[in-house]
Length: 133
Image 1: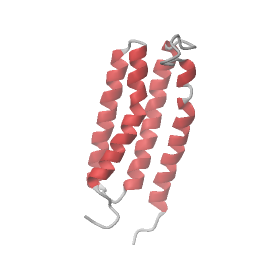
Image 2: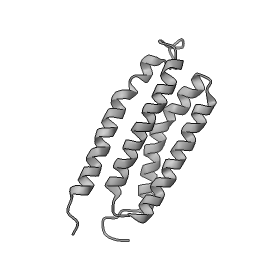
Image 3: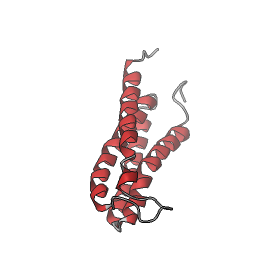
Image 4: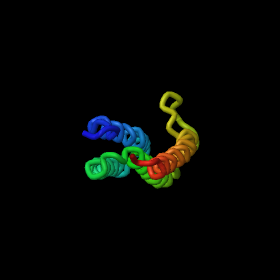
């Protein structure tokens, strides 16, 4: 393994963490509105993105920052799609204060997605602009 390429297991585990964090809310919110196909599609998309990221990492093991940035951007873009699917199906306010699943709670995801997109773009630019020895 070359210097600076990182542990393959660590990189793939980190990417799995990004994907689990990015799509867990899809499964939880889709089960709340009784749309299991949306939740299953979220799991399938997360698994597909992880497999794609694993193949890209195998081909370009020194481009970890760009891979992480591209994964963040992909998760943010796909989450916007799921947001548009789930938001109209949720009640405006939660009927159960202990669970708190409502349109209001889902709107809090939007700023997180914007930050993820900006961070992903920054990681890609950092990887592309840094000098290789």
